[in-house]
Structure formats: structure tokens, C-alpha cells
Length: 198
Image (cartoon, rainbow, N blue to C red; front, top):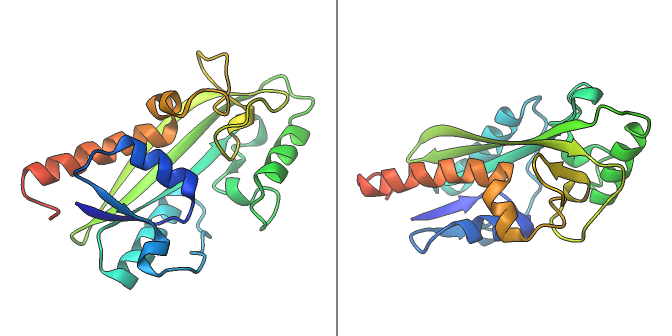
């Protein structure tokens, strides 16, 4: 089954490909000739994911899925949330985003947080949503060189290592995106088994 993943983020594409078997062929945006940045201006993860999926589907006519992920910190009123990628500005710098987060949480003792991913799928013209979530906390300083985004400061519940310190194989077992992807893959496998989504 061929699907477009509406992203140019090579980290995300690698994570997804590590989860999939040979029944699925994943194309990135670059493979479809879409080079422009797709706007993410909605106020919820669900709306952003749907907008991206619809945008690509309208341009290509292909089956497509898109994700949007937010880091939600209760002590910051749920921020950065839907604005996670641009938290420190339009440059979308991982380093700047982490610095701003650590600065704003500097004197906070309540440091709980959660990562939430929503995937929007358009398959044969129908739309579906899948969600994955992982609870944890924001530590005081960065640790680890793997992962991307806020991974160096996010400690998942039950772990002593950040998402930037654990192996990708382990992250793919427990992460928010992995959980949402497993729901998507289970759905697609069912569709393939019943003859839909060809």
C-alpha cells in the first residue's frame, strides 16, 4: 500500500519506516513534488493534521496521512501545545524552543508534561483520526544527543533516560507518535485484509 506522509522531516520518516513492514511504501512530500511549507495555523492538533492531509490529498489525489504533535505542560497552561514547533519563533529551531521552555519553567517545581500526537488519514476519500499520548516530565537541563524536538528534556514516566538518550527502537515502542502510528497501522492492515485502501 502506497501512502504519502505529509512531512519533509527526515527524523519522522525514519521513525515511521522503522515501524512499518514491507506491505507499506511511504512517500515523503519531496517525493510528490510538494516543496512549500504547509501552513499550520489551526488552534488544535486535530485541525492542523487534517489541514495538512487535505492539502496534500487535493494536490496529489493520493492516499495520505499527516501528523501534528504538541508538548503540553499543565504548569504553562498547556503550552507550548499546538505551537510547539514555533514556540520560540518562526525559525522552528529545536534549540531555541528548548531554551525558551527551560527558561519559562526555571523556578517551577510542578514539571509534569505530556506529548500528544494526532494523525489524520485520508484513505479513498474518507477521513480518520488516530491519537497517541505519553506522560512524563520536563527535566532541568538537556540530556542526550538522539531524537529531535523536545526529546532531550522530556523524561517519560517510568524512565530514567530522556527520549534523546534511549535507543530509537525503545522510543518507537513507547512514544506518542509510535502509539498513534500503531493505531494507524492496525487500521490500514485491517483495510488491506478486507480489500479496502488498494
